[in-house]
Structure formats: C-alpha cells, structure tokens
Length: 496
Figure 1: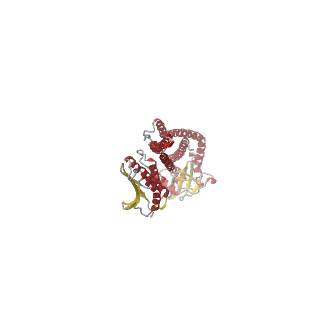
Figure 2 (figure 1 turned 90 degrees about the vertical axis):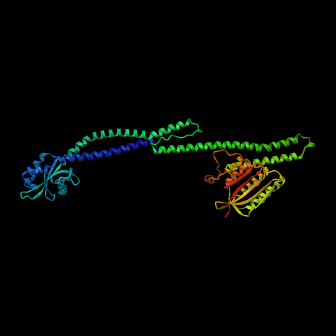
Figure 3 (figure 1 turned 180 degrees about the horizontal axis):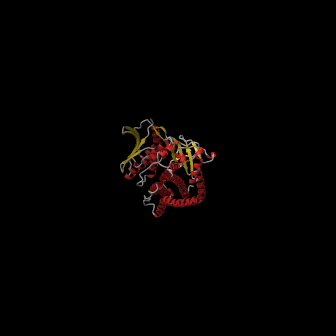
C-alpha cells in the first residue's frame, strides 16, 4: 500500500464509491419526492369529488355499515387507492379492508389540516395499514345535513397493492439498473484514476528528468533544480531540500579541495623542515667519514647529533599533530595555579636559552588560578617558546608575562610570549588571526576558519598551537613584524 500506484488506485476507487452512493441516494430521494409531488398534485381534489358525488358522504354519513357499498364502488378506481372515513378527531371509522390489515386506528389530524390549508406538496400522512410508513393522500371534510363537521374522507394515494406491484417491478428491473450503474461508475473510476495518476505523477516525472539532467553537469558548477514544481507542495518542498543538499555537497567539495590543497602545501612545508636537519645530519656524518682519522673533529658528531634531535623533535610534533586532527586528544579542564605552570616551563627551557645566549624572562606573573588543561597548556607554551628560541638570535630576549585588559566593561586576563627574533610574515600572522570559535566548533571541540581562502602554513609547532587552542577554547592574538619580533597573547579562562 506504500506504492504510489496502489495509493492512487485506492483513492480513486474510494472516491468513486462515495460519489456513487451519494448520487444514487440523492436520485432515489429526488425521484420519490417528485413522484409523490406529481401524484398528490394530480389527486389533490380526489377526496372532495368523491364526497360530492356519493349521496351518503355528501350528507356527512361516516358509519361503516352505511358506507361499505359506497367503498366497494370507489375501489373501482383502482387498487392503488385506499379509502377511509374518519371522525373529527382522526379515528378511523369505515374502510374497505379486512380488520387485521388495519394497524393504525387513528390518523394525525394536524397533517390533514395542513393539506386542507393548501401547504406545499407533497405532504405525507398516516398510513392506517402500517405503523411506520407515511404516504401521500387526499382528504376532504364531511358536513352533515345540519351543517356540522362530521368527519373526513381520507384517501391514500398508492396503497398497499400499489406498493406490492412497484416492489415486484423494481425487483425485476433492479439488476439491469445496477449493471448499467456499476458499468458507468467503473468507467468513471478508471478515468478518474488516470487523471489523478497523471496529475500526481507529473511533478515526479519533471523531478526525475531534472535530476537525470544534472548527471552531465560538473560538480564545479552551480547545481540547482528549476523552480517549476508548484503543482504539488510535497514535490516543491522535496526539490527545495534537494537544492539545499546540492549546495551543501558543493560547499563540502570546495572545502575538501581547499583542505587537500592546504595539506599539500603543509606537506611541502614539512618536507622542507624535515629536509634541513636531515641534510645537515647526513652532511656532518659524511664529512666526518671522509676525513682522515687524525683530522676528524668531534664537533662534527655533536652537530650531527643536534640535527638528529631536531629531526626527532619534528617527527614527534608531526605525530602529535596527527593525533590532534584525529580527535585522539581531549581537554580535561581543571583548576591550575598559573605560577606553578610557568615555573615548570621555565625549568624546561632555561638551560637551552642559556646555551643559545638568549635571555628568558618571566615577569609580572600574578599568582592566580585558571581553568585549563595543564598538560595541553604546557604544550602550547612549549611550542611558542621553542619557536621563539629557534628564531631569536644570540643576545636576544624572550619575555613571558601576564596582563589585564578592560573590554566592554569586563576584565580579560592574557598570557603573552614576546620575543625579539626574526618575526613572522603578514600571511602567517593572518593564519592565526583567522582562528574563530563558532558555536558549532565549540560543541565539536574543533576550530573553524575562513572557508573562502586556503590557510597559509604556520609550521608544525604553530599548527599544533592552533589545534590545542581549539581544544581549550582560548582566543589568541598575534602581533609580529619581520626583523623586529613577535608577540603571542593567549586569553586565559579565570577560575572564579
């Protein structure tokens, strides 16, 4: 029953049957009404004429014994008439029938008075031979010799014999009528079904044709269905949903292409980062091997070891970035003392900074609690400070400090990492400034960026920072100028 053909067929048959029953009932009632109206109109004055021509009735006599012979003569009019005399209260007095046939011995006088008052025909009155049936009639007042109202002459039009013959004829003709009617309504139902099928399936055919035409259009073009399905609300809504899905698919395809291009650029950038320490490592080792044993300098081995450590660090960062992108790392927010967190970072980088001749300052650090994941925050700071040490020359300075700013009537706490290194280019700065936390991204623990352009590459370290900030739902502000230095400011979530 879920198939469209079956549903349409069922609807057509149901509608046809309902229309057939309603029309048949209306025709029957209308035919009976018209027949009664014609019959009663033709015989409206029948009772009056009968009372006038009969000497007994004309004298107002209503007794059964006196009128038996008169009733017998009146029945010569035909078996379709039944004649009764009534007293002024409607009680049946005389009739030409067996006693057992009389079921009602009183006729409703109000109906007779309506008839005599000339109200619109047909008017149905009491049938003395039936308790539940009403029939059309003719009636006349009977006036005796003293001018007094002695009763009524009451004539049923279409009596019991008439009904019997009519039922017999109807039973004979009924199969023909029903056969012709069913045949007509069968043809009507078939035509209705064809019209409904054509009407309901026309938008579906159009939709199928338009969808088939989309196969030949490249996905790079604007794929939309034409707005020509107004004949059906459901199909029109379906076309709108399909258009919405097509737009989503195109946007996702464009996003996938941008991501593929970004990954391609990232891999090129990464290959350069990996190639530099690997080349240095192999170069120092090759130099050490080709030198005579007496001339081999241990510094070459140390340089090679440093290059190996750099290569190892890049590979570790690459694995960490892959874990972040795969959603394998989650933030576990808790209360953390900021001073303790920075003290651990200082202990980690102080020896390296001293060896490189870079001054590492932790100034204006307030003792306060923040809401963060200490492990992830340390990774962020480690990457920022490591990046600063890598690009800050000997004699330079790296400063880590906190500051408070008033924005829109509320204080914001920031943690800044500022260096005097080589700085960043503008396109790299914009890559971090484009970092935004939309509502969807926050719910999914992911970051969203401007989809209209590919992100410039930031290096593995800053790429990790970008992902970790997304997990912690922290904002970052970057100020940098080539040859001057960079400043990274991270907004802290304070623990109230």
